[in-house]
Length: 200
Image (cartoon, rainbow, N blue to C red):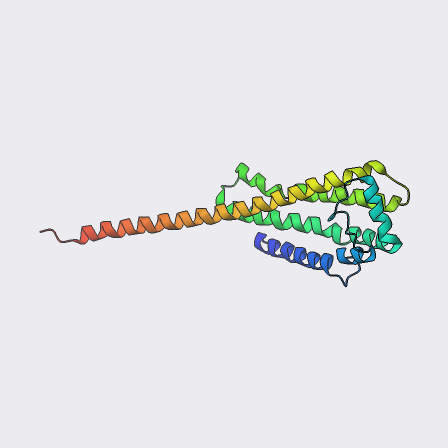
């Protein structure tokens, strides 16, 4: 599969996963879990700052909400981080291929979007751990969830900024080359006109 097709396939998978994750009628969506918990959002979208707050949220979910959350982690949250990373990595590789020569270190930037996705999987592992252990407590894991979620979110934002900055740089480069080409063409036409001018 060519890179453009791979990018479109990953983008389609990402869009589909986002729809599933945010459609209230689907049982493994974030709105369904929040509805079952009386409005308490899922931990990876509304992080709790203390272990007590984490376990208060788990209690609010109830048995049905906790089971649904586990299913969400095993389905939607298993696909979403990978789809997010692949979409951004393939987009970066397509753009950098037009901007940097093969073998350039700039191509290493394309792999950075995997960092927030790896953090996302670590976060999901922590949430799954406290869900499976409930009502028993794994305090250190619950305490680590908030800073982990904050770091993951910051990395996702940074990754998106990197993709946008690369897109803008590619656009500026193409515009510069086009303007340079037009300038060179205009100069060539002027020079040709002078050569065609009859000598008096």
